[in-house]
Image (cartoon, rainbow, N blue to C red):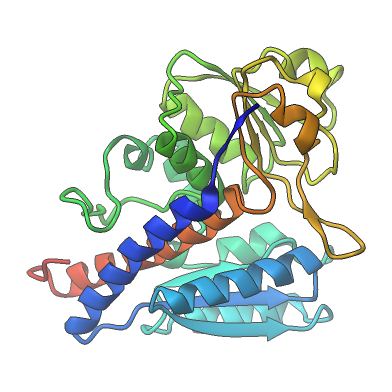
Length: 311
């Protein structure tokens, strides 16, 4: 029976550190601000919006809510982003994805000021990750409340979902060096950045996607199997090597409102050594990393304005 990787517990620990950092900034008269922009009414996005809003408020972060209808034009969306970019009270911006199909998501995400791109999905942030200018955060502890948490001004932010996966693996002392990691999904939000992060930790990485033939032949080789497709029941027990670590990053909202992942949880949990539940696995850590990045953005901004502030 697999050990359950409790993301909610780790997320609570991260939020405590974030709240302490937010309160330290408040002693200097500085508020930490996070903007959430939701376009349309995608069920998964609405659920994530609400969870992030609640978590941010609990951490003492001032959350600014922006809602646009599904019929909003690209210019309307870009106008909101421009206003947020110029608002000194807001340190980070999260645009909830997916956007309506007629809106070019890359154009929207790239419009975010890189210093406020706390989800790390803009082209500049992705480029810094690919160039190994951000991966030092995986090696050196820069989280709030540690001696080394100073974040260089030239560094971008790591995407929150894959960074959350890495922190969850670290929390359970699951090493990556020399391991074969198989990632299903090649999105900018999860698959691609996760593969770069795992390479930085010296794993051997295979990335599979919808065009991969005979997916099971790859998944059975995985020491660490990560699935982020949004396809319910994609990973069955016969596709998993005994003792593998299984990280379910998929989020699927069923007709009755139940949230499930990509993995056939019951049978797979009997075969894996570690497994993440859905909900309660990667999701809470993703939100916690978003809050941590928001705090780091606020700290970095204040250090650039007041270099002698010890935050």
